[in-house]
Length: 234
Ligand SMILES: CC(=O)N[C@H](C=O)[C@@H](O)[C@H](O)[C@H](O)COP(=O)(O)O
Image 1: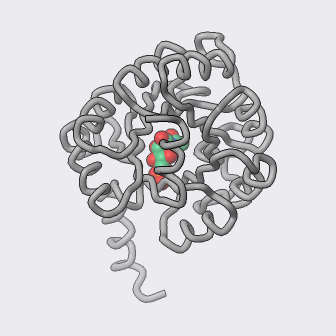
Image 2: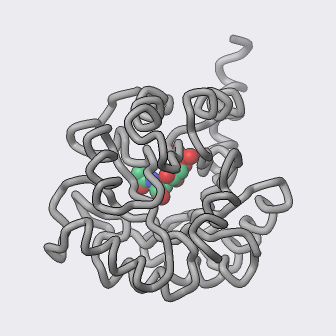
């Protein structure tokens, strides 16, 4: 699929993140693939998947759906942990993910590669890059390094941004990225827990919005309903 075609497919749409870490009741690649199919049935334009050792999830989802796959692999480590090395990025691309999601911050990567090098390696495999960033300067640097898509994924999850927006999404970052990178695909991701917050991200200029937990983590969803039985009407 060409770069433009992949971007067109996600434009104006919802992307569903299907992930379950070690110890989660849904931790099974075949189960993740079924969730991905259910998400596509509900209108997801693309699936984001992969986690700690998540290459099997990427392979299973690739087989299960015919929408673009945004693949990643996570390392259980401090600092850069989303598809941190060139080797990881190539492994994800070689499984057929149209887009490789990787850390797009300016923090040092464990293999010492710079972002432009990782991005070029992914492009040479024929895949696009979604740079997961935490701040506006990160996003600008990632775009200059060649990222095809810039996503707000890591806002709130780096040392400098921890707790920046509390439990809600970083809509200001989405608006900032849109203003600074008018020609880029900007993806809103991280703590979008309601349809109204998704609509707000689109209003601020997001090309697409990723929702994970609020759709694909039944334990989290149950907890929010269970809390309501204890707190009574708002
Ligand atoms: C920070 C980090 O590791 N984010 C991960 C990225 O792949 C996932 O754990 C999130 O679930 C995903 O970004 C979707 O966000 P939310 O689940 O909040 O809708």
